[in-house]
Length: 205
Figure 1 (cartoon, rainbow, N blue to C red):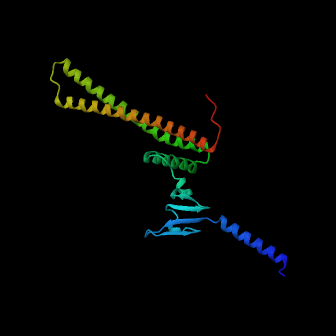
Figure 2: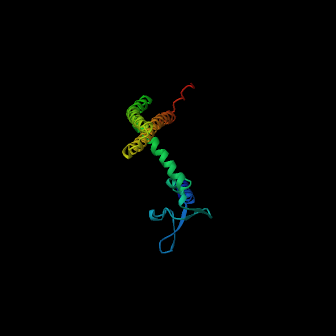
Figure 3: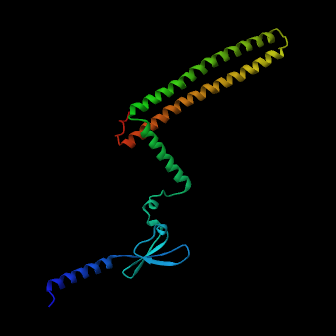
């Protein structure tokens, strides 16, 4: 007579094997030649293709979106994706460049020094150009008072002087605008840095 313990062990082993087979999934995929295949695993070269899972008599479609990396891909229009990547790039640059807020202030001050130097230079050049032009106008008035014909060279010098004054004014105005832009840019960088670091917003002034 067969030992009952052997029969019980064999029955348990069969049950375990049936359980494993019941849980195993059967996949269906098509190769490059159009041939349909079935198996418990999908070859790597076909992993990203449309497949079907035969699960307990039910067919489940599985397309390329099963890949977690593809699910994590940015969504939206090309312009939106580029904008999101640019924001990410700037954020990474901000965190990699500065260790604290004080370093942002120091970088701002260094840039402002350069712009302030240009503002001072253009201010001096503008005053010089205006003085020269004023002298030319006085000379022109003298000719007019005396009823004499104004020399062509003087007329030319006045035209050049007026053009130079206009140029210096534009250079000075551009430098002043650049100064405000530098302040605004570093203020925005500082605010974004605080957000990325999770700092509390500064108290309202």
